[in-house]
Amino acid sequence: LEAMLASRAIVGSNVDAIGEILTDGVDGLVVNPGSSEELAVALRKLERSPQLRQELGKAARKKVLEQLAPAVEKENWAKVYQQVLPKQKFKQVFL
Image (cartoon, rainbow, N blue to C red):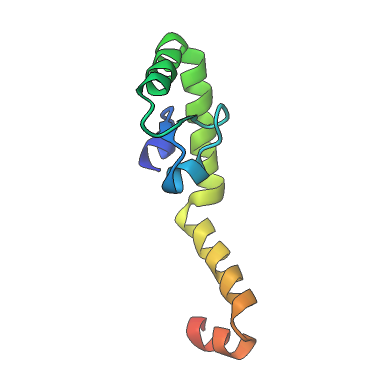
């Protein structure tokens, strides 16, 4: 997330959280885990295209600010708790 916030183009594998966060070709490049060939292709792609690096980096930063920032996450979790917990329990926990 720090690299995304710094507008850096990201190459990640489609496992764990990074696989859920990145959208291939939109805000990063996603490769299969353990595929050194795919990783090399993705890195070469970024090396050869400053415009792609800039576009992916800009989109990555936007995603973090709009969807993954702490304030946004706080609101998202509050909504989850509101849906899951009875209203009175929710008020006691958060108010």
